[in-house]
Amino acid sequence: MHLTISTFDLVVICVYLACVVLLGVWTGRGNRDLSDYLLGGRDLPWWALLGSIVATETSTATFLSIPGLTFAAHGDMRFLQLCGGYIVGRFLVARLLLPAYFAGEMFTAYEVLHRRFGVVAQRFASAMFLVARNVGDGLRLFLTAIALKAAIGLPLTDSVIVIAFITVFYTLFGGMKSVVWNDCLQLLVYLAGGAVTLWLLADALPGGWGELQAFGVEQHKFRIFDFSWDSSDPFTFWAGLFGGTFLSLGSHGTDQMIVQRLLSARSQREAARAVILSGVVVLFQFTLFLLIGIGLAAFFAQHPPTEAIAKGDAAYAEYIVHHMPAGLAGLVLAAVFAAAMSTLSSSLNSSSATLVSDFSGPSDGSPATARRRLALSRAFTVVFGVIQAGLAIVAADFSRSVVQDVLAIAGFTAGVMLGVFGLGLFTRRTGQAAAVAGMLAGLVVLGAIKVETTIAWPWYPVIGSVTTFFVGWCCGWLMPSGAKDDLARPLPGARGP
Image (tube, rainbow, N blue to C red; front, side, top):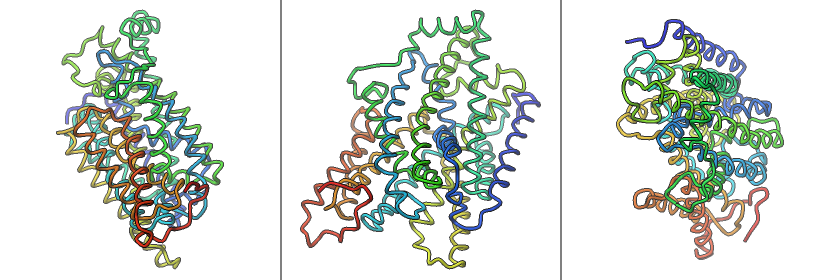
């Protein structure tokens, strides 16, 4: 092992990781049943859930790869256009989907589909979530391991195992309370790390902040809006508005990892406040990370690295390890791990909740069954940790731009999920077979688009949701009445034919 950071930095990282584990174990000490373990007893305050939502969607892919977008040659801040769609989408989640989730004592988003369509639709959607979530978070874990490898010289495989082990440990013992309160701590740590980085980058330039601004203007890096209609460009205004809205509707309205937090709120009103305000915080932090990328480009233009930085993803890690003062490098590396663990712990907890609640059958309410389901949930937390670690190791040979790979995976499933939830909300004739047909059609169409076209990933949730809804709606009308499923109760707020 070749240590490329100071001993003091290593101590800072170790102290932080120890605090994470201790906080996780301490906050989860009162877990008595599945509701406590998976939903924090449904008694978590809205501001803590807001922090957890933001930290959960801010993985290492955000912390390291987003600065790479503005660091790259010809890079700019057009990524911010997505935030407009994100905020619109969150308003729609609060208005359209939260009433269905708070209509009963549910553990997962997909129990709504069981009530509306049946168990096959529920489990089909759950399986899509499990595959997409664990593949995406395997990529996120891979990117974090790159930073650990650069910092302390551990082989990539060993770096993956270290991060996965710590995250699994505190998630295993603490459950949702541990995840949420650690997320809040990690949000503060990585925002502080980002702010310190931006200050140091500006301070390292002879002209300070003014020189950083001048560099950004000269290189056209402050460009935000692009009103072109190029469907292959992920960073146009229209891709941001429509793609961001549909992606946010899918990720925050139908993805178990976020819905699980909303179900942990004290009331529907507090859940709505958390999800809507999280969009504003995300806009702020994306702005911060993109500015860091401009600062990195300005800094390395004056202080070229020994070896050229081949990928934008690697620029921030290069700066942290080789140019940050002792102590501060440890803080920012701790922030990198914070961003990773906040997402990974949430992923493990929500994957476990989905598998136990959606595939193990309903509880009979007995203490023995409750204990068995709690034990199963903890066991599956470990299983998913192993799966994600394995995927992270494999990802080293395939992933090119991690942030875009992760967002493409999210867009692939978010649209299909959104489409089937739309069928539940806005149609009455659509039964289970039609809903499953719609989901299959959405996946097939998106697969063809991914392979055969250059359409950019922000359009995936739009295309996926429209295809799923349209095919499901048509099947609901075309199937002979005798072949249709016995339609379940409409969801709260459901309307339409």
